Length: 235
Length: 69
Image (tube, rainbow over all chains, first blue to last red):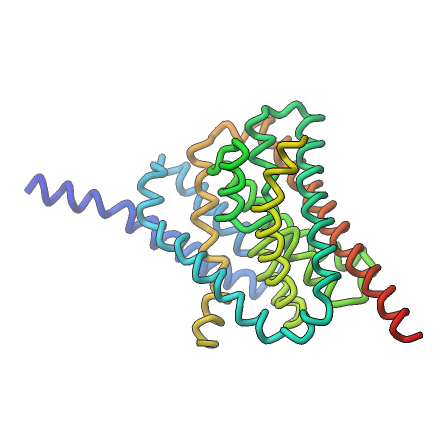
């Protein structure tokens, strides 16, 4: 009896967190459809609601992780699924790839140097400075780079997440402020600065923007894995 | 295949939600340190967006002008 109770209890919290995560996500998505605003984006409201719930229930992170780790595992296949829109826009990409390469090189340099510069001015510890540097690229690759240069991969995951939310929120405003004539620049902006979340946002704006953003995200990820550690070590 | 990929992409934001919960384990992120980190992330992201978009847009216009000549 006691063993059965233990088993039930073992599964109750992870299952609860899985259902809570799904409920929070779909509720936030429904709300966003009715009131589309930067603050009501599902990636702002759903984690916020879950954090409040977790704080109220004194949740253990291990329980949360056990119920939901397979959702995070879906990020792998989802990243591969970006190949499809990229393939559909191949003509455009073949024509403009040198521009995209230059944009990705400039964007990656600004990302690493700005994080380094501001972290130094604000006297953040070395460990955090190194964890911040790869924040603009997709989570799995960012965690790899963080580990390579001596950062904390778990913290990098949080910074990547915040960067994505921030990029998706500010991207809309940037489109209003910056005089961008090409879908190429609009898509690259989201893919470079805000990885997967930026790509999801770019897909709302247009097919061309979405495909370019997906491609730029992959290019930025690869460039950072190869050249990022070199640049960070030079600093 | 196109429908499966479409679903994965449409529901992709859901797969990011659990990653955010790691902050439960790092309560020190809610203090002044957290505000500083947020500042670095917000300003840095805006800079990256502006630099990337303007670079590509300027090059794109320059290339178009040259081609139309």
